[in-house]
Length: 507
Image (cartoon, rainbow, N blue to C red; front, side, top):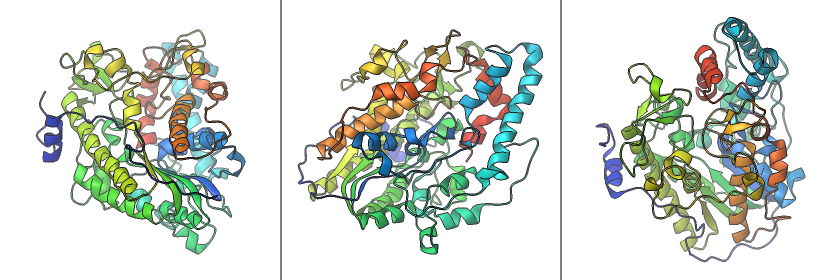
């Protein structure tokens, strides 16, 4: 398999050297003396959708984001401040609630003659969501007197987190139109951000997320988690299109054309992130690596692996496209070679994040690394678990908690499907948008971060995440919509007719 001709030279060289080996020691074996003393703000998080608590196409259960789960384990949940989103399932479009609405009306299967009625019902649901956020109660963002501890906003890449403020989000909003054909919550990203960023005073309206964290740092932050960078590559699979960043990657308008940042451009952006972090007074800092894009089931590998021992399939298309039906001339896709190039670029970006943590520890700062990319490799069902020949020497399966291994079937990284009898047939770690975690998978992220924070000396009420509580709250794992059968026919139909992927990821 050869890399595409437009692959950046540093990515080509890195691919020849082989994939990055994950770093699971958050300290790199470099001892430091952690800062002592109390801090008013025990946890502050700067991130994107993965930290905000986004799942199944919407941000809604923000009390079950991984930062909120950590705060619960700290015994600090009542003091932990985070945004809340109401209405019909949050912003911008809750796929789970949409499927349950259709299931309630049409049952677990939709007959051919019912399809026009189902489409009418689905459009009615989407219209209800649009009306709530554009003209109803959701159109007015609440003001709050204290800065949120979770400063994460879905859709944000590195540049967004460095520059966007409540003032800039307000300025970017335009008068919405009640479009009968193209029903989408307009300015949904800005509406979401206005519930996150401080805006109580004029000065606060001009604060970025990093500025807001620095303001809280004046009173002391115990642990700062920064989990950014996924959106500098994720669009390669949400749009199934590879477009490398150009030299105008810092321009807010121009960068919309790019789906993956060249490693040198990412490094330049991340250097600005590191400068912003150093201005924040935090006893412990945790930086998170960027996940590989080919593990999330939003892009399903088709056919057999390109060769024995390979990580890659020849093509990646939507999860509801079956191997026998796939036509590369008709079906949107990326190739295995393109996936390899993007994953290799992510490896280079992650090496830079590793180096930043290592350098900080060498000068006595209590910084840690959470290798999210490595964690996801350990739960990759089709890449490694089902293909013994592809497993690298470092690989071992991730040990899920007993509360999860007791579930039938045990949650895995495939796209979630129902068994027609009230339970799951597959999946359980990714929600119905094929990108974001389910509630129990957010618990896995929280558990790994709790372990790192414990190494740093952070005291918890309990260092073991209460997965029994999370299983009870996880409706997708316990009883997914039964109209989501193994062919994923309904969800593919809904995307074709409603374009929900564009609504969710075309932010």
